[in-house]
Amino acid sequence: MSTIAFIHVAMGAIAIFAGAAALFTAKGSRPHRLMGNMFFITMVIMAVTGIYIAIMLPMAISVMGGVITIYLVATSWMAARREDGVIKYHDYLALTLALAVIVGGIVTGLETQNSASGLKDGLSATPYFFFAGLASLLAVGDLLMIARRGIAGKHRIARHLWRMCLAYFIAVGSLFTGPGAAAFPQAIRDTGILGIPEPLILAIMLFWLVRVMTTKWYRTKPVAPEPTP
Image (cartoon, rainbow, N blue to C red; front, side):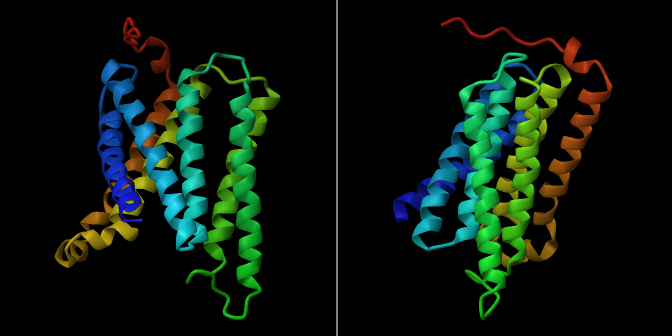
């Protein structure tokens, strides 16, 4: 468990760095793609090890959080690389992950709500229903994409953008205001500075969403060619 925990923390730290670098490098550039790939890989490893730890504890809410994180980074990464107007098997696999969280969140939430203490793993039913609701919104987006036989243009870029930013928001929240906050000295926690990164990420996400959806930026921005093998 100590080795798994070390990998979990190390990958999370690298993901925080890579995510910040991806946000502030030129979109479509080689450094942006490199940092994006690093963010994707480290986030998946962090989430997988986190799910393993949560199962061992056990901590059901962390299992759901890990699955949602894998889902978000995977669908965002695929959106950046997918062909226009094409649906593949991994789109159905991603939808299955979202549906699993919906079922798990509802079942666990109802179980918690009807328990004698009204708690499970020290939490009320609200967080479980929250994850079920979030997964429902994500699943609706997948179903619409599948029904339309793909996604293209600014909608594809927007899908990549907001899903990756949401995954980054979860990772940053876990570190600065979630369980990871205990690693910071009490004096730093008391200043409230650890609460700044999360709204900042949401603000950056909204800025880029507005820019992508309301301008022709995504058509005119130069994209560096893929490196030659």
